[in-house]
Amino acid sequence: MVIPQDEPKGRGEVRPICSSRPALRAFSMQNKNTARVRRETLRISSVEVAGWSVRTDRVPEVGDFVHCVEGLAKVNSLHGRTSDGSRLIGLALVDSDGPAFFAAASNVLQKDDEA
Image 1 (cartoon, rainbow, N blue to C red):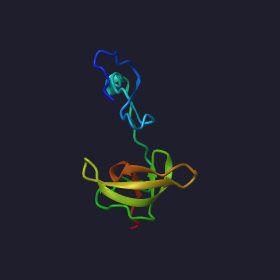
Image 2 (image 1 turned 90 degrees about the vertical axis):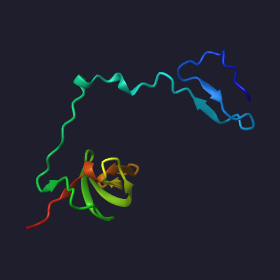
Image 3 (image 1 turned 45 degrees about the vertical axis):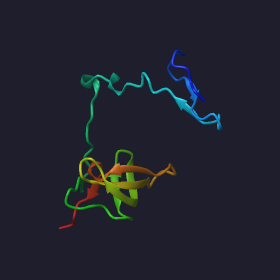
Image 4 (image 1 turned 180 degrees about the horizontal axis):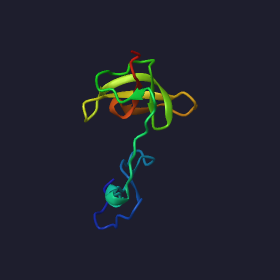
């Protein structure tokens, strides 16, 4: 199916992308600007937990526990490298039945070594 170019492309417009399977739809990504949050209004702070720190010398292993933004999580899987060079890890929250999610190892806290 050919879509005429003179039709307006509105925000959130649903347009077919496959004539043999009309259930497949494409959403217009026009107007989806991630720069709409002004930098001066953005505040990011880290959380300090006694006995836990960001570890660049150690990659968490499957079965390890880490602290993330949502709380204590168990490492379910290890994946490739992220743009900062750390590993991508699959996590599941310990105190919640929510879905598993991914985080960079550089964005979680790992237990400090016992001296």
